[in-house]
Length: 176
Image (cartoon, rainbow, N blue to C red; front, side, top):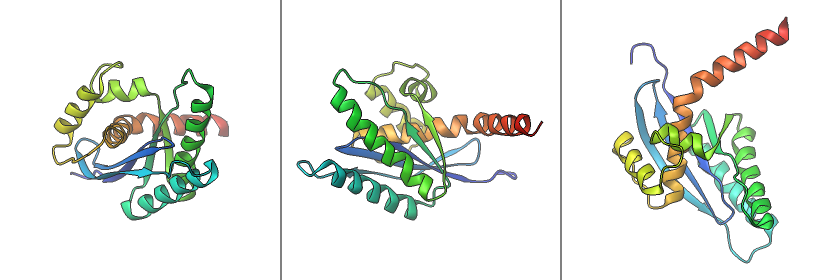
């Protein structure tokens, strides 16, 4: 690894019913699968309690994962405004949980995630899952939400250096 620091990243695919999470490790070049899973909320329960279930589940996963950085998929707008609003609230929990644990949180659009993993911004789920199997041969995921979360983590591993550079430049410009 020649001086490269290992970084553990948690990718989060937010959803009110199912929130996927995936943890990988990178040394700047190599990617390693650590773990992945699914957090579900109880259907029929009041929204506030479902959001609490997601938040507590994510907080617990982050605590045991050893992740130092997090990446979350940006919300896309559904035709149903109510569904979009609920997804946005679940996404809020996905942003808040790692932030409360002190992790740096990055956000990526679905197209950038697909392009980073497959090479095409409009890739199908099967293509993404096949590429994750290639990039992370030890990965075991049982749902599309887990696979998506791993794709989000891979996207962050590919773009985190550029994001850090942009933050440094902005900080330097603010000092001037």
